[in-house]
Image 1 (tube, rainbow, N blue to C red):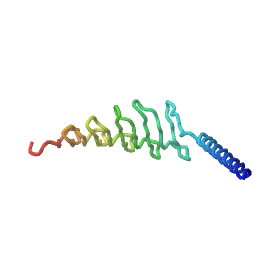
Image 2 (cartoon, helix red, strand yellow):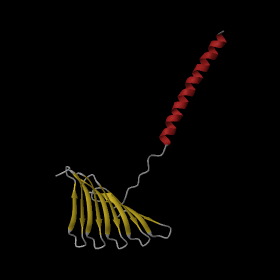
Image 3 (cartoon, helix red, strand yellow):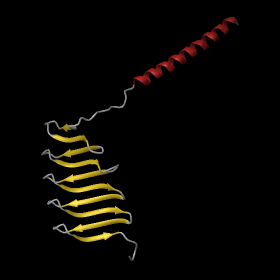
Image 4 (cartoon, rainbow, N blue to C red):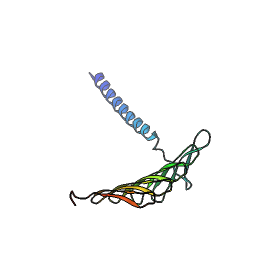
Length: 155
């Protein structure tokens, strides 16, 4: 009977040592996991190029946050996602000449969409206001010809 008690004590000690070893190994393996990757963007930005060496995208630091630009095959800017004023976003679309043709942004009361012609003149603006939405359409001279504000029915 005495031998069985000793065997039982030895088995319990071995189990405790095994458990402690498991906990130590698990903790060590967890500490070896790589941290989340971090890239610090230099002042001039981080430029991405294709296999031919042409610029296809750029990430840079804007006035209020990050700026991400996408370029076409001629390395002209095609679109841009950036910060807009405080705590807002801005998506800008460019034509093949590099002129802005559309913008989608945030405003104090919601979102705003601006459409421009090839002469860089605004021809349509739609935005959220405190009363709802508003739409403005302009002629080729930049004069607003249609204005559709959201108002209570009949006013």
